[in-house]
Length: 617
Image (cartoon, rainbow, N blue to C red; front, side):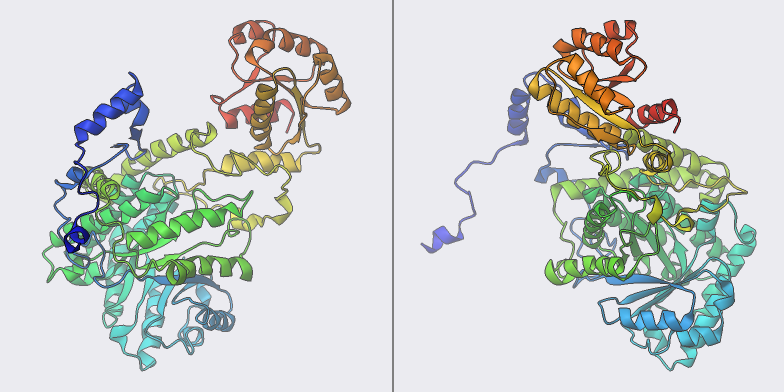
C-alpha cells in the first residue's frame, strides 16, 4: 500500500514523444500547413509554437539559478514576491497633498508619488509640509517635476536630513531622465554634456540615501508609442547603458550609478509576453552592469517600477479599462516588479475622482490579499511556454541592443533616427491591425456601446499634447485615438446619421450580417436601426425611407444578393446602399454601380472615415 502511494502519478502510462505528438497533429490537420495553421508570429519578430515540452528547456542555462541570485531572471527577492502599491498625487497645494497622502497610507498604499507641475512650489518649507508625519521607512517616497529637478533633489535631501530618520533606510526616487525627455519631447533642458554633469551632481546630492533612485529610465514611453516588447526592452537597456557609460566617464563609481537607476516599464495587455519581458529585462541588465566590473553582483539587480499602459486604454466604454489594467497588474506582479501604479480607468478624459482612484488601489490589494500573488516567488518558473518566451525576448532584445550600441549608443541612434524609425514601423503595423480589427479594442473598434455620449464628459486639457522640437521625438499615441475622433465628430455633428439594416431572405445569414454591420457602423457612433426581416425588398426600402435612413445596409445571403441588391439600389436612389459581406457576384454588383461593401476584410477605420466624408461630418 505504501509503495502504491509513492508511485508517480500516471506512471503506468508510457511517455509520449514529441514525434508522436507531431504525427497526431499532422494527421488531424489533414494536409494543412502546420506553421501557417498553428504557429503564431508575434509583433516582436519571433514565432510561438502551439505546444512546448520539457525538452524545450534543456538549452536554457539560467534555469538552475534561484530567485535572488544572479542573473536575477527569477526575481530580486529570494523569499517573497511582494511589491509596493503606488499612487501619484499632483501637488497643487502642499498641505492638501500631505493630507491626501496620509489618507492614502491608511488605504493600502505604501508608495507615494508627488508630481510637481509648478516649479515655484519646490521649496524646503513646502517639502517639510508635504512630508509632515510621513515617517515610516516602509513608505516609498517618489518625486517628479517637469522643471527644477536639481532644486527638487536639494530640497528633498535637506528635508530628509533634518527629519532625524535613518537615511540608509529611506526608499524613494526622483524621476530625472534627460534622455527620456529628449526621446519624447525632442529636446533636453540642457545640452547632453551639461545634462550628464547635472545628473552627476544629483547623484552626489543623494549620496547618503543609498536606497534612493535618482535616475529614471522611462521605458514606458516606448510602450506608449506602440513599440514591440523587444524594442521597449532593447531601447530601455540602451538608455540605461548610456547613463552608465557617460557617468562613469565623468568619474562616478559604477556601483553608485547602477544602484541609482530605476526602470519604469509600461505593462501592456499581452499577458504572458509582459511577464516574460520583466524576467528578460533583469537578466540582460545584470549582464550589462557586470561588464562594468562593479564591486559585488548585488548592484546588478534591475529595480523595476511598472505602470499600466496607456496605449490600449479608451475614452469610450472606459469601464473596460479596469479589465485591461487588471490583467496588466497580474503580469507585472508575476513578472517580479518592485512597485506598481495602476492608472484609474477614467484618467484619460478627466481628473480621476475618489471612486476611480479607490478602484485602482483595490485592484492591487485584491492580487495581494485575496489572490496572494505576493507570496509565491517566480510563479512562472518552469513553465515551458513562459520560459521560452523569456528566452526569445532575451535573444531578440540583445540583438537590437547590440545594433544600437554599434551605432554609437542610444543618443547617437536617436539623433540618427534609428530608434524612431523602428518604433514608427511597429506603431504603423499596430495602427493597421486596429483599423482592420486584427487587434481588437473592445468598445472601440469592436462591439461599441452606440448609446454612449462622451463629449460633455471629456476634459480637453487632459487630452492636450505637448509641442515637439529639436531631435525628432517618438510619437506617443493610443490605439483607439482615430476611432475616438470618428465618435467625437459624430457627436458634434448637427445630425447623427441613421444606418438602417435592410434584412431580407436567409434567416441566419441576415441576422448574422446585421449584427456584424451594426457593430461596424457603431464604431463611428452612428444610430443603428436593426430589423428582424422584411418579406420583400420593396417593403424594406419603404421602411428605410420612412425612418429617414442616411445609409442602408442590405443583409442577406450571397446567393440572394445578385437579384436583391440591384433592386434595392434602384429603389433607394441617392441613399447610399452597403452590401454586408463579400459575395461571389461582387464584380457584377460593382458594374451596376454598387460600390460599398463591408466584411471581415474591410479596413473599418478607412471605411468609416469615407462615410463621414460622404455625410459631411
